[in-house]
Length: 394
Image (cartoon, rainbow, N blue to C red; front, side):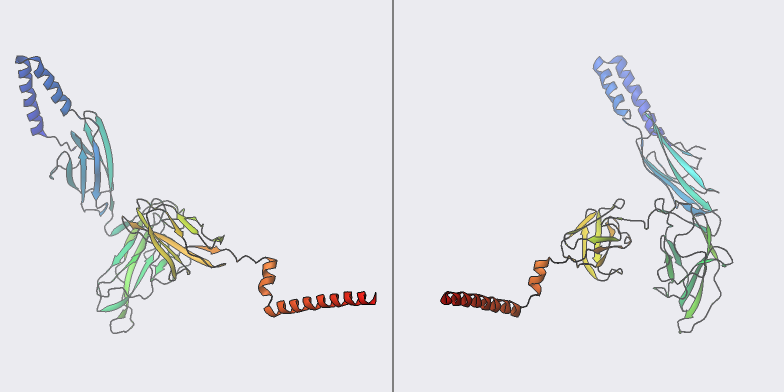
């Protein structure tokens, strides 16, 4: 059944109003007719409807669960949603919400119309099998969304092990954290960062896969176990129940990281100037303020400069060392902070060799200048004596 929301009371009042006006027009003078035209013009819409929002929350549910379909519309006389949904929830022509429980993945289309025409907007709710979850993909970089993990503490345990595999038998393990201690042992948890491996994780034990971007469209399996108790005793508990999730289809990765990318100096640039160094990077979507860091080491510990800027550029007025590698990165600060970008690097130019006269002047000691001066005086004295002796002989 198509959802049709109409203000019956408003239409009834408008109809009665129009009847009253028509009676006045039949009995009254011409100026009343002119007033009627103005009322009709004011009531007529001036533009197409506007759909401010049309969404389903949550976007992914298990089969048998429900989601809320909500909308916010302006300037519409009629709304319809297809496929049909119930109309038992409270709603108006402008705002409303409905509880939906589709048995399979469904795309709902909202149509808002008035006398000038109609516009549409769609929202999709993804329905998965019970116990299965979908991990999204960023449409630009192709990297998977973050996966948050949490579980109950078992018998005052402190250290755990997490495995993610491509098969239910865990013969193809793509991530094995080894033993790790969560930040809060009473409420243990971990996370698989977007497009990357768990920060505290160990090495994978499968040669065909490595930690990183998950494969789009592939189903993965997850399990936990205890490896150490609060008493300090190392032990291995049975593995937990196996959980399953699927990575949504996405695009192939096109950039080393999702975020700002360097424009100047380019990554691995060599021969960069040591003074009046300028940095620029690509913009990050909807970002109003950035944070810039320049350091002497790749770990970004020896910070030379840190500044917030409202543009995608920064000018460093300090002096850098010759023939030295430096590292820099940026992040979004406002309206919402982002992760740091990849760390970019550049090397400064070699120190130019001094000119020959300058080198000679710089390396000649003072005593050498004294010897040259004394020798010059002696030579002049000898020449004078020779000249005088020749005159006497003549």
